Image 1 (cartoon, rainbow, N blue to C red):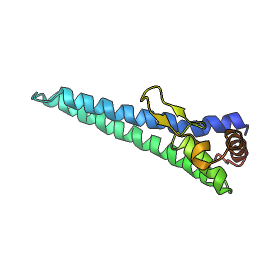
Image 2: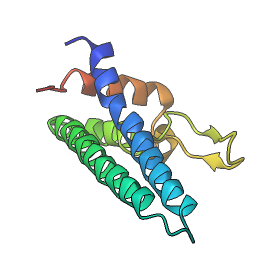
Image 3: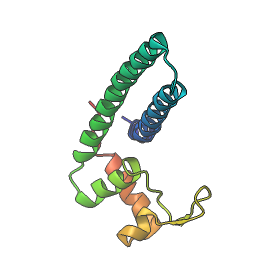
Length: 133
């Protein structure tokens, strides 16, 4: 499998995280919109929506666990750490200020005390060891 396909596969974890957060938020908003109302039919629909949301979340979590398993197959601990930081903790390679929060975020290179170039090199080496079932 080519490296771009491996990157794309591993990047699913970020998308999964966003989808889970959105599904939970939508279910909470539906529940909140019924607050103080006595509408049994609507409550049953919200309950059904929440059950479906839970099923979706379970599928997303299963995918994330597969991604974690693929990363754990990398034999080198440093390379594995880079992949975990990047694809499971969503940490950027480089340090810098986050536009949304206005806070400084440390990158993988700074946290691991490596040059950015070395982190990119180790990252690419690690991708070559990923086995996707």
